[in-house]
Length: 123
Image (cartoon, rainbow, N blue to C red; front, top):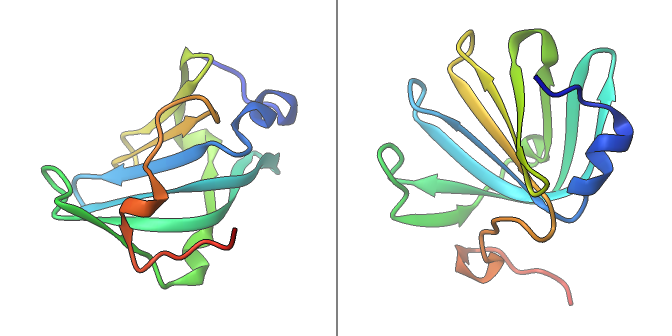
């Protein structure tokens, strides 16, 4: 099991967070602005967030999430098993809340923001 620390999480700034829950049928992915530990929780602030439409099983398109509250992701680490898959990817899995969250570094897997309907990024 991997121990998450603020130092460890720095590698994910500029990368992406993907969160899926097949039971509640949601999938979202966004670009990580900051990620840190606060009182035993993983706290991720996103620059933008997209919803995977058609999940499950697989998204057939990505659309901009217009709910700004979703730009702040918080997960109690007591409920998640953390596994470092590689330098570019760390997985948090919670059978308690049926959620899988993946942290990707800048050079890891990416959803191309130009494929997200309704998302316009400032240059």
